Length: 130
Image (cartoon, rainbow, N blue to C red; front, top):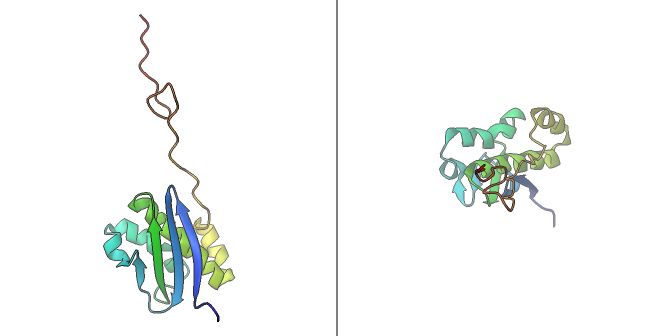
């Protein structure tokens, strides 16, 4: 039995997107909803489409994504990362295009932890001289 999809995982901040690419017509579903409904902002929709537009594969694959954790912006970027990784599994020649655009690099920036003796990660309590 051969698998009929390509799987990849994308991550950003605390968001994880498990992405499956099928041969198809270009339908993108995120958590069972069309991506236009899940990501109502146009900027987030553009982020999701970015790897497909760069590689000129928009409309060639049906994409099913299970996004979890983080906020909508982090999830959109995690979906983009997952789609980019899955496209490379399908066609390794797309790697240079996606790499040049920076879509294969996992953005490692995360929320910095709060430290003890301080109200936040970097902020200090107000200093009283007297």
